[in-house]
Length: 285
Image 1 (cartoon, rainbow, N blue to C red):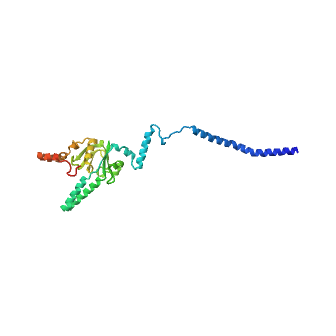
Image 2 (cartoon, helix red, strand yellow; image 1 turned 135 degrees about the vertical axis):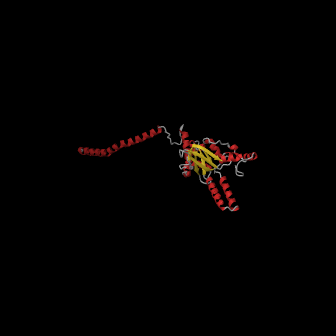
Image 3 (cartoon, one colour; image 1 turned 45 degrees about the horizontal axis):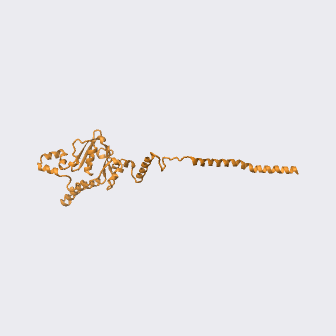
């Protein structure tokens, strides 16, 4: 009976070893995984939090950068160019003015229905309507270094001119070609006809052509503000320019050789009337 019992015990031991051995092999692997997970958890618990540049809680000097970034995002969300708006404080936009177009339309109304001069009616009417339309969209902008011309939507607020590019006005093919933007350093002379009765502005620059390129624009914008801005920002004109406070019909005559010649034939009383006449009657602001 003993040999049989011993053999039975041996078989039982072998069976137990067969069942227990795989578990003993797998157990250390599970323990290692558990230990590794626990180690990560402990490390995360003691590790300091690192605030990145994209954090909503910037530290120290990053606060200003974050504020600027938020402002840029806000402007972009509104459809505005943050770069243009940043420079807007140093840029003057000359608002449109409809007086020249309005005067021409008034003349057309008189020449046609009243005088029955229909050819002159058509010419003055077309020119007046065209200048009035241009006054609603053409804007002059003066930065600290440049003058440029931009187009806005007709009737839009003048402030929208700060958010458009010079390319909006296209290529200036009629006056030398190229973009409608010129540095003040390139301007060799400018004239304003007429101080007191703004009608036409002229300037010559050597940026477009080395020998000089003249530009003429009807004053379909605020003539006083245009004049004051040109006095302040552009190079000095060849001819002396009076301040706006001295504008009258006499300064208008003085701005041209023809006007000065006409003045020579006037009496002192007529000259006094010239000095007393300021602005377009009923139209000047």
